Amino acid sequence: MKIHFVDLRRQYQRLKEPILRTLQQNMQEASFIMGPAVAELEKRLAHFTGVQHAIGCGSGTEALMLALMAEDVQPDDEIITTPFSFFATAEVIALLKARPVFADIDPETFNLNPANIEPLITPKTKGIIAVDLFGQCADHDSINAIAQKNNLFVIEDAAQSFGATYKKRPAGSLAKIGCTSFFPAKPFGCYGDGGMLFTNDAELAATIQSLRNHGMGQNKYDHINLGLNARLDTLQAAVLLEKLAVYPEEIQARQQAAVYYARHLGSAVLKPHIPSYNTSVWAQFSVRVKQRTTLREALQQKGIPTAVHYPKPLHLQPALAYLGYQCNDFPIAEQLCTDILSLPLHPYLTRTEQDFIIETVNSFYEKG
Image 1 (spheres, one colour):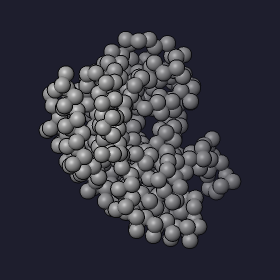
Image 2: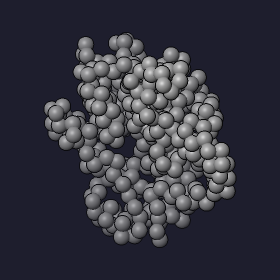
Image 3: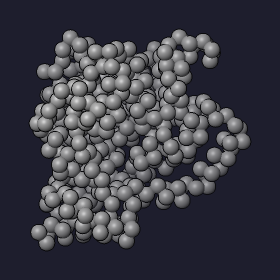
Image 4: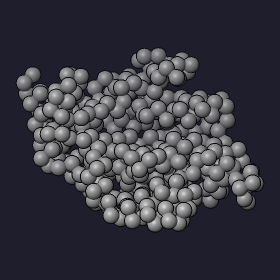
């Protein structure tokens, strides 16, 4: 049995006709940059997240960068974030010559632990990037309360949580600025790179709209900011519009698959914890296991792919060595890197495939 970690082929077969139709229509219109599909997607996703303004951009990384630029982050400013995330979270801070300051994570949700934030705040602290990891939101009410008390901004990195909820509020709407990614393997992904920012602040939205297009003012030869070429392609927006029609069904299918894993995987596997106030879109089904390397090899021999999100925490990445962090600075994040393992999960995973994965994992531990 050959199983895909994320099976975009099956999704494409389901959506093939409408996607090819919309791509052909957009090709005929030849409006490839900031075409009508971009504005339509922004309108629909603003409604989806319950915010006033949605601004498309070229990737989730660019969304984070634009958010920091809109908040006027300067060299030597400090931004508090998690050490357990994809590199882009810290990368954008460092690229602006600001300083990533890491706080250890919650041992159950793997998200930024609000209790670890306040002791790190200094006169140089300007903001917080809270990552919604593996499909569920961080504890944004607690994080926002700390930020408000200390006059800091918060950016929600919802690259993995788009479609999830926190206390019945949509991911992407939980901070002053929310950011998401449309990377193909994300729960809501396009056919290349893409991203979006969400905000209720009209002034911030206008600034972001300028920054994503070379700092443009009244026209393309009027530049009021130093910006980026960070626009969302029209063709990617068109694909996302078609995918949006089935996204609620896909979220439900992800949830069903996650519940089935949780019910049938044995006790040797420590399964994800979702607090009662959260729903997850299950960007990954990440478990904690013993003998991870040997288990991965056994699964691979059976044609079952796995992934490690993440093998090395951000504070130990070579590119950030100048920050001066050491091993054991963030023990929870570092321990997770040694035993975390992601199993295949996507809306088109069949029950037969799941049973095969579950049986293989359980048999591995039963055999000792």
